[in-house]
Amino acid sequence: MSDSSWGAPPPAGQAGYWGSTAGGPVQRAAPAGPAYDAPEAQHTRPMPIVPDGPAYGGDQDDDRGAARLSGPLFRDETSQARELPAETQNPEPMPDAPQPPPAPQKKSAGRDLGAAIGVGVGLGVVIVASLFIVKAVFVGVIAVAVVVGLWELTSRLQERKEIRAPLVPLAVGGAAMVVAGYVRGAEGAWVAMALTALATLVWRMTERPEGYLKDVTAGVFAAFYVPFLATFVALMLAADDGPWRVLTFLLLTVVSDTGAYAVGWRFGKHKLAPRISPGKTREGLLGAVLFAMVAGALCMRFLIDGGAWWQGLLLGLAVAASATLGDLGESMIKRDLGIKDMGTLLPGHGGIMDRLDSLLPTAPVVWLLMVVFVGSA
Image (cartoon, rainbow, N blue to C red; front, side):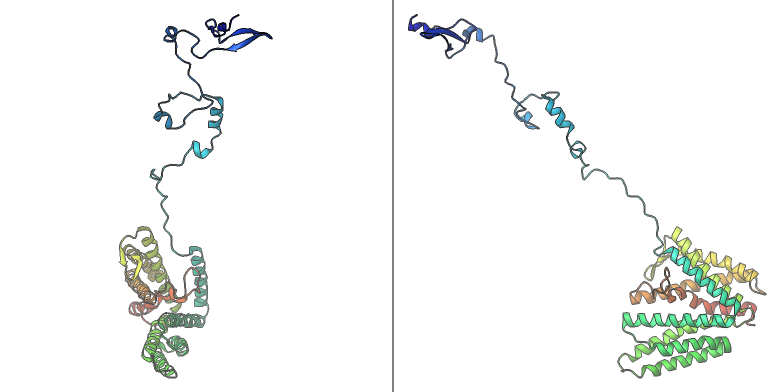
């Protein structure tokens, strides 16, 4: 075989051809170029080359003109989709997605209601027991409340305003004022008040003169505001039916406060005095008037000898007005001092003064109307 036979093209459809050497036949590589004629190439097209994995992912398929398929090309893609974490399969909602409206908040009383009820019931038991067993014991209860109230008031004045009202003459004179009112009547109460004011002026002279005027002014105010007004409770107690008059006074004041709280908390919308006490409403005042008038008619009819139901209506109206004014008056004092409560002695209530706020100005009103309606005996 000549050397030129090595360049002869192999038969059509074969990739190479066999040659012979001295060692025997060997396979030779096919020459470069197509293994078929050019006219036949026009009727064929190359097979697409499928890569080992997707050439592009995500949105790049559209940019590069790759055709999308309706499913994964390989089994591994299906298993990977199933193994995606929950955060990827269920993405969080967009920040601007509408959120469900928050649940409406219930109205809060602002205090520990359970503790307030418990303390109130305990005080009521002590007061009623001392009131109907021995009158003198109840006079002692009034005197103790007066002394504690003076201590709370003078302490807050010194802490918040640097006003040093002398506590010793106020406490001694206040207790004496209550006893004098019970024993000697209104005349004894006025004399004790005058002596207490004088003792306050003299006691303050033992200290430096700076602030003397404001200190003694606060002392005289405290003597009038706490013990002198409380003396009218002792005046009511001195009558023959004194315990029932005092009980009527306490019941009407408590019922007035309860009616104001209940109606105001449920229906209150219009503020009564927002600059003084934002929590009080006109609806609450109407509730206080209605509750107190009904309670007054019942008390005057069944508890007071010689009383009439219409007198109870007037008494209840007066109590609701005086109790509300007393509450607003102490709210004004506490707002000026920048405090919420006068003390922390009574859980759920604050201090003693926080319970006497509506009782103190109501005592002279009830005493006067009782004298007008049924006399002082």
